[in-house]
Length: 193
Image 1 (tube, rainbow, N blue to C red):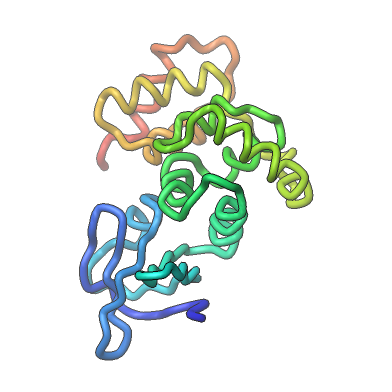
Image 2: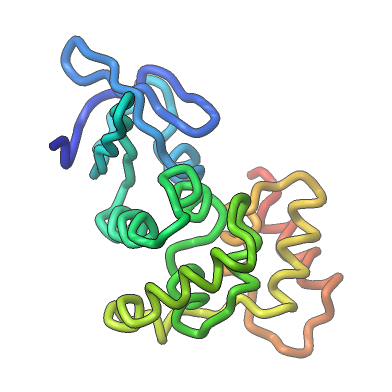
């Protein structure tokens, strides 16, 4: 099994990288945050990987951290969650928000992931809440309705969910701040240079 690979990014796709390892280019399916952080052609990259074996296909999934890989593999253990849905979950929701949603039993957060409906969200929570509690998710920040409104506003303006979550995490935690002010401050954080 391929557990880790180091190489150079040869090409970048919407949901994968082609990593040149020696004389071989490997297609590695990755979540969007990995593309955002490591998806520069010519840049060296090191990924921890999961080799998914099907009857007619071998697919390699890569992550920058062992935590992301662990969450991916935990999601695969839930009935009805395949690698594409698990990858979409890690592309849409940060690992911290994913753990918090499971531990605090918030299926609405998981339902925002493409491919996860309310039934699958409840199945993920049911199967993973004890495992997530063991890894310290109770300290992870919860995505509130106010936070969701900011993310919705930013994604409507064309920013990715990952960009919106990153900006949201850098906002001050002021309960009295109006939605418009939070969005304005988030836009200031997202503005180029």
